[in-house]
Length: 87
Image (tube, rainbow, N blue to C red; front, side, top):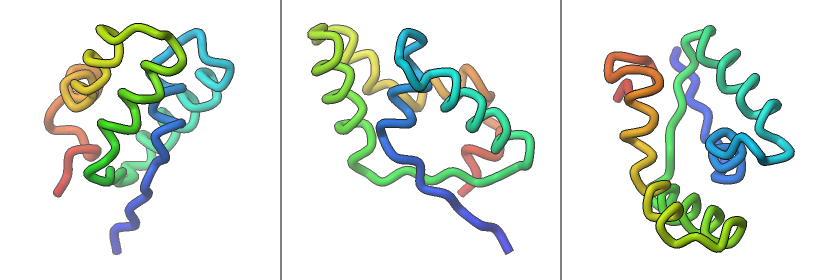
């Protein structure tokens, strides 16, 4: 049985922003979960939550817009065949 984990937007933001205090912890967890072939799922609102958090933290609208391309960032990082993109 596949077990899916919903990862909160704050974890994604920490994972994306290397200067975030929790970046190393989120990067470690995501990497570790990835090696176990775990399945991650995202709610529809994830991109909006991530963009809003990035905008609040950085004050940079352009950076927040870039964060809305999270799926592109993830596909480049993990590859489109990665279990993260299983349906």
